[in-house]
Image 1 (spheres, rainbow, N blue to C red):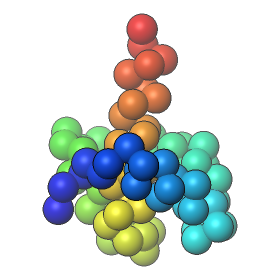
Image 2 (image 1 turned 60 degrees about the horizontal axis):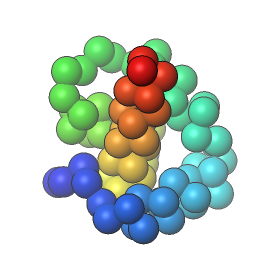
Image 3 (image 1 turned 180 degrees about the horizontal axis):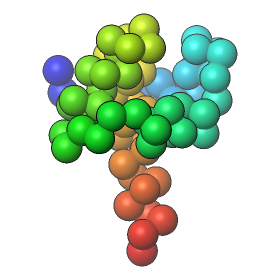
Image 4 (image 1 turned 90 degrees about the vertical axis):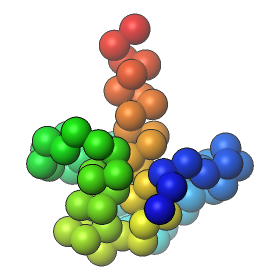
Length: 75
């Protein structure tokens, strides 16, 4: 499964995550940061989907956004 959605789809998925999961994006980022140290984004996506019952679309959007914000913090 591709971890890349169109920007519009990505934003729509992110907007729905709190409603669908009952958890805000920062909470999911903490979960990702405290989770296993996977080297590949796809592995993090699969872990979120399997461990936390997310669809792969939502998991991929979370991982992609987490990577984007993490990179922005380091600049």
